[in-house]
Length: 178
Image 1 (tube, rainbow, N blue to C red):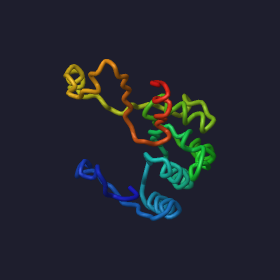
Image 2: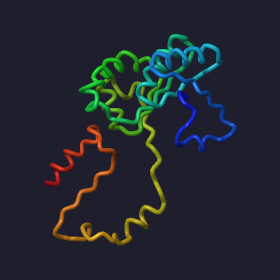
Image 3: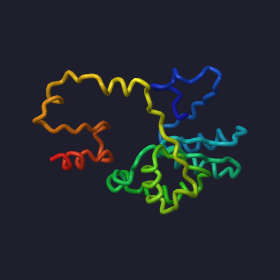
Image 4: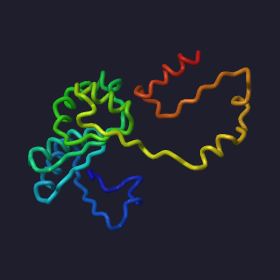
């Protein structure tokens, strides 16, 4: 872990060993990962975030014997067209093919990533969906909604759930409803 603290820290079982790598910038983090992997007998490195994915591949592959598995959870091709993210597609094309495997959380993420990387997604990507099922969903779906604007037949309602970021593309949802 770059930083061994956060929202999910309490969910880590006491018997699971975690190590805080530390670092205040990507070069320091990459060096710290490389240094840690060089000292440890590590078989597989799992990286789960975009920039750490790139850093992990470079650090682990310089040691040759460590398998790297990446987890990708976002469709980023929209975000990566501008600003500070514009170099990410090129960096991904150069680094991600060195991963031994890539896990995506949906087929849409896999297709987007394959397009960004210019590779066939079936060669190195596996989709493992995030678990989101709650047995109460069906029961709750049948419950009345005590909100007047949702029950007004004169109003059209579209609900979008997600952070207000460009990659969620709420503009398309709004145009579709208009």
